[in-house]
Image 1 (cartoon, one colour):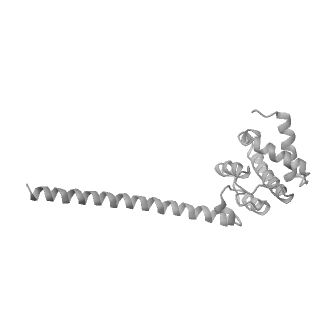
Image 2 (cartoon, one colour):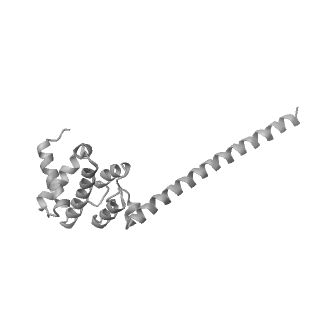
Image 3 (cartoon, one colour):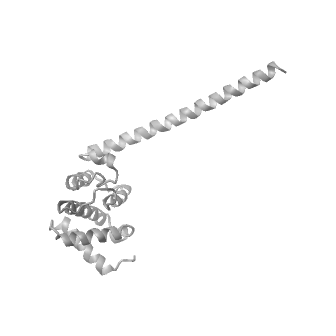
Length: 173
C-alpha cells in the first residue's frame, strides 16, 4: 500500500469515531477525511480485513458524506466512495436487512449514495432494495428471451428465404 500506515490508522480511527462514538467532526477533519478516503479507494479493502471492519468502514463513509453535506461541502454526483465500498459489501453477501436499512436511514441526499446507481435512489428500505433487484433480474430475463426470440425469427426468415430461392432455382432448371 502506498499510504503511510500511521496516517492511515489515525484517519481510520477518526472516521470510525463517527460510527462507534457518534462524535461530530470539525469541518477541517471532514474535509481531510474526504480527501483521504478518495485517495485510498483502491486500497480500502486491505485496510479493513474483517467483515465487521468492512461494514463499519461503509457506515463511516455514509456518515462522512452526510456530515459533509450538512456543512455544505457534500458532493452531489457519483464520485463518492460509498458505492465502491457497497460493491464489495454486496459481493461478500454482507448487505443484510439491518445494514441496508441503517444505511438508507443515515445516507446523504446524493442520489448516487449509497449504491452508485441513481435508479436505486427511490429505495426506502430493505424490501424496496430486494424488490429493485428482483425486478431488474426479471427485466434481464425478459430481455434475454426477446433476444432469443429475435434470433429464432431471424433464423426462420433465413430458412424461408433459402427455401424460396431453392424453389425458384428448381422451377427454372
